[in-house]
Image (cartoon, rainbow, N blue to C red; front, side, top):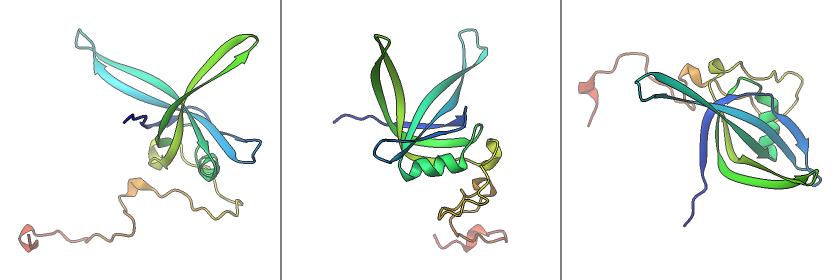
Length: 151
């Protein structure tokens, strides 16, 4: 069995670019920056930034284009793919993440989402994950006594 799985959480470095394929399917390209912090041999804290090219197809491409912009935080799951082409007699290569799943990060960590005014779409804007509100779960406002828990 072979595995080609990518998981990234970072910030968009540029606004998504929406295009249409000859088949009519939409495709969006954007770049995600991720940071890694580590200590070097001398014990000094170092930070390294990586930039990842991401491609999203179909309805998810439309959603990404509508709600994300430069600075937005995003979680991407997908696979690595390297494509090649020839330009001016020289072979060019590009490795990118073909996204299967894109989740919007907390609104506060990026520069926000695009306005949906006038879009008239059937999609709802991403939920604010910073508020701690889960998918319709109502948590008690009173303190819970551990002795009241039945297990």
